[in-house]
Amino acid sequence: MKNKTLLQIAKDYGSPVYVYDAETITSQYKRLINAFSKVKQLRLNYAVKALSNISVLKLFNVLGAGLDTVSIQEVQLGLKAGFKPENIIYTPNGVSLEEIETAAKFGVQINIDNLSILEQFGTKYPNIPVCIRINPHVMAGGNTNISVGHIDSKFGISIHQIPLLLRIVKNTNMNINGIHMHTGSDILDIDVFLYASEILFETAKHFKNLDFIDFGSGFKVPYKTGDIETNIEELGEKLSKRFNEFCKDYGKELTLAFEPGKFLVSEAGVFLAKVNAVKQTTSTVFAQIDSGFNHLIRPMLYGSQHEIINISNPKGRERFYSIVGYICETDTFANNRRINEINEGDILSFKNAGAYCFSMASNYNSRYRPAEVLIYNGKARLIRKRETFDDILNNQIEIAL
Ligand SMILES: *Cc1c(COP(=O)(O)O)cnc(C)c1O
Image (tube, rainbow, N blue to C red):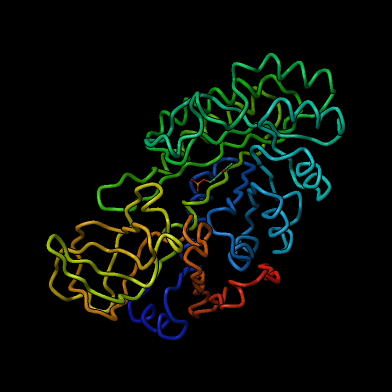
């Protein structure tokens, strides 16, 4: 996305604003499809929680993707966006049996990660096919906040519990049609991922009626220079080969499924914010933008580094800045960052703002959540209005005092 286009969007729709590029989303989707072209049946279920705007979901529907959902509301959004229920997988964690029953009534693929719930669900609905989420106990990521396959994780059914799992399946006579894992958010090492996949294949052998094996996600995209990117092509080559071998042994052509979020949308998005004030203190120069962790919390929550560009002055001389927000809380986006000279009124562009950015936004400090714009077929389209004061008051009840 060109600076000129982005500046025009900030002018037309105000700031702060999220901007997504449909072309980048499409090319990432196709890249993944191509990497696994040797697999006969492939399904990519886009992880809705990364970016859940209905127009973005519609784009994925047009591309032919399915959806990975983690709440009943995400299921409903997916159905509203036009997805067929059979193309939606519902992978909740820690939700009530009632919510899982509601999802089953919608006809989506149920994925269960808890033996107690599995037993209750299987007893009540032995005919509804269920996928099982396994915890292979492999640390795929580098950061414990985002690694969900390790021993302390709340996600998945431990591979050490397979005997009890098999007993439940036998006793309830339920039908297990899929095996799933989602080990963590960052695949830094393809061999570690392939190792976890072997555990999944071993588990799969216990079930005779499988339709698919779901390898979750964890595809890493670079945020800052020097970051590793998951080598999708190498992973595709190696895993496809192994998967095809497995299907031969298993005696049936299974579907290989993935559910990427970040890989598909992270790089397609930027976050534009305006500099309200430049404030020099005894120790640093702050640039204060019209935002905070109410709009983009990843730097404060995970220590993520989003590259920041001054698109109003991209040729200005570089200086060091601390980029902070306007809310009453420490909300540092970047510390001591080298950026082209910043003046009040400049628009800063945060890269990699497509995944887990707007979807984590809140109204903290009673601020409005930003607008969202999708560039589709070369045209900027508003896909979410900026909130107004009515949205802040919506659902609040003013009692007589
Ligand atoms: C969040 C999530 C994903 C997507 O992870 P990314 O790192 O964004 O690709 C996939 N599957 C499940 C079950 C998830 O919870």
